[in-house]
Image (tube, rainbow, N blue to C red; front, side, top):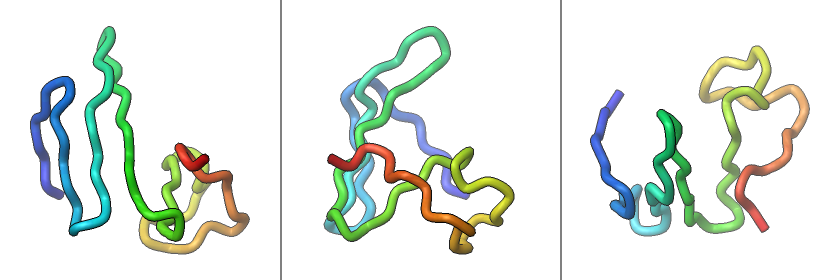
Length: 67
């Protein structure tokens, strides 16, 4: 696992087509903005249920942040 420290407004790039931005920090919580192509699925861990990371979920959860 790669662990990075970022401040408000700073970005992390994954390949040439995914950008993660720290958009808010408040009382121990952070909000992330994710820019990715529409064909890249983005899931919150709690929506994956008991599936192991890297495996397809049993039912397709709603995409987070797409719209």
